[in-house]
Image (cartoon, rainbow, N blue to C red):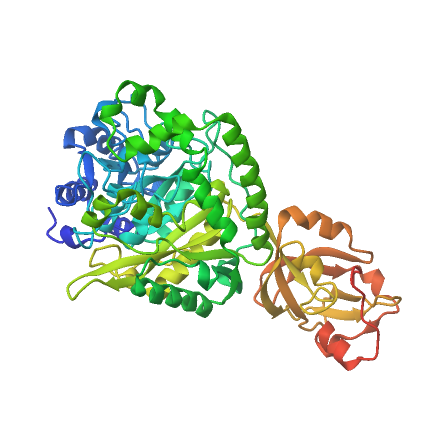
Length: 620
């Protein structure tokens, strides 16, 4: 074995570089298995033997590594997700069964070259956010074993944070893919519900569950999402990826923050300081904080366990818990059994209330691009959690329980370390939230914020700074669904027709110039006055432009209202890029005033300030 393998980072870029440098598949997987021999954190329920892993290795050795996006990448699987031939326990030995097929999402990853290493510990039946509710033992934090790992995807987070595997799968109904990420210095992606198939996943709340992804970097999480996000016709909750629209991640952007009186840190002054720093970090990245009313979000969060959705947990394992209640540990048994008492009227009343609350919560998206909250207000010792398991677990869900009920996407990311005495510093994180299908912009913004923070990957000695920036173009079905549009007239920022762009959700990308191949004319007629930009073979100049990003779904309605002789064609920018933009028919400039010497429409308006401007609702 290469003596340097024990120092190798398991982020995707490092492993790809290792393979390119001649390290073999069996060396990497052997090193992953060696690392996973560490049992001190109780992260695994089942670690695959070399015999169990051999079929995956044998297949990969017949293939070209360059042909598979995840060739030879070791990963772990929460033990409520099926891996063929390995028992699925959902954290309950008496419930265990051995599937003959992989879960759909696991199948996608294995087909892409990833190698499963083991099944991970969890809060039993994915009921909890702390990681202590398991008959296999409380999973221990990757930084300090006296502290909780977070749950329910406890072992999945620890295996990545310790650098034993490159990524892992969890599930997230109420925060199980985000809270463990916060407590172990990881990226935790809670995708849009239905984007990752739940075929082969033991349900908790079937209508709210999603498979989640733990990774060392946001770029790695996006690479996994690119592979895993495939439509599954066999899953009635599966949905096809929709365009994610305007990518706010590069800024400027607006981010919501709860009002000061609505933030809860449960006495943790260190967390207060880190959240304030996280807000400042986003501001440095081009964000503008907007205080929102967090009350309706908190009311939605209370519905998850105080309302009838707990009945879904009961329905998921009804036959088993009714037949073997003693096999389900407390407080999981009491929580799930309480679902028996929920009635159909309760369900309808709660559904109506959720509908009204969603209307209130969704209203914030007209003012902000994303929401920033703590992931969890504080972290507890294992002993503290076991002494007060229900109340402290409820505290952990203060900022997470509402997300799936409202059909939002979310990414948890590191925000720094909290000192716990002279010898201990524990990770603490924040979460970015946005509407469904905004997963990619959230990951890109999380990547920027994570890199601004810096530090190491998980609990390893490897530095984040050594990994590539994760803002590359998404693959597969994850597309932006936007059109870049160059404007030269009354649609420019601050001019009367600019709302025709902003009301359609457009975002300013750049203030720039055309290539020096155009002439600009103030067209005859009006009001309104209209500029026309014509490309010429000789005598052209650079014209001031703005490039906007417009959701494709609104592009048609925008173009349909443009009057002749204007049209949308291709405009050549100063940097050589071709984008859609306003152009003018050469015949349309007959008799028009040539204003090219002003260099742009705004400059001409300033020079002719007494002339009337176009009025709102009219095109230039």
